[in-house]
Length: 114
Length: 113
Image (cartoon, rainbow over all chains, first blue to last red; front, side, top):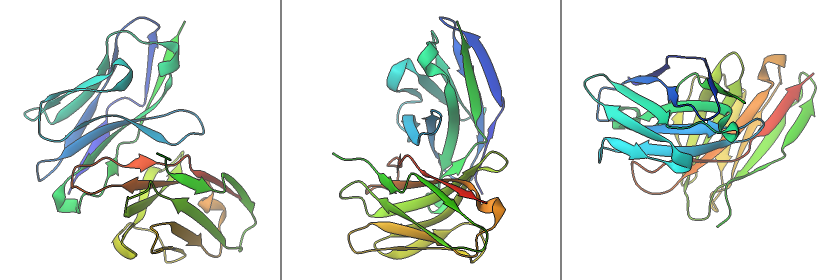
């Protein structure tokens, strides 16, 4: 079975400071991992994905994530937060054992302070 | 190319009624999945359709059903609506390949009163 734990339900940073959103996963197979962002009353937009190629994955809007198998983690980072980054972020896992069904974390609400 | 389109965007229904939501996937995508999003339960998987066949199903009661047409458009139906069915319903489409990402529509906001 696969599962995802987002370690922080809320993260607050000041504009221009680094962002770290933490995600741990559990998977019986080699997983695919994704980060999605959701702005209020919108659907989910893909930020980046890991699919067993490079462990450091670069995404849109300056975000990146590093796949660490030994720590079963896939934390999302950005060097400098922008006001427009304020949104909810979801870490997502899928593996072949679940027929590639997506399992979502509970989400992290990012607040960016001026 | 056009993204995933969900209609309607907003819907208000009364308890006991039924509702049908529609999803048009990205052209060429044959997989369509449905999710329910609520503040308390987060994002939960409802079901997935591929080439008109239900391929996966989440843990929801039989009041929730869906179908997919030959043009890959999908509908989901909820019968005998309950207050707890109030949620944002999201549809996602995927292309070929095991590791392809899902593309989401903007969702249908269903309010049951």
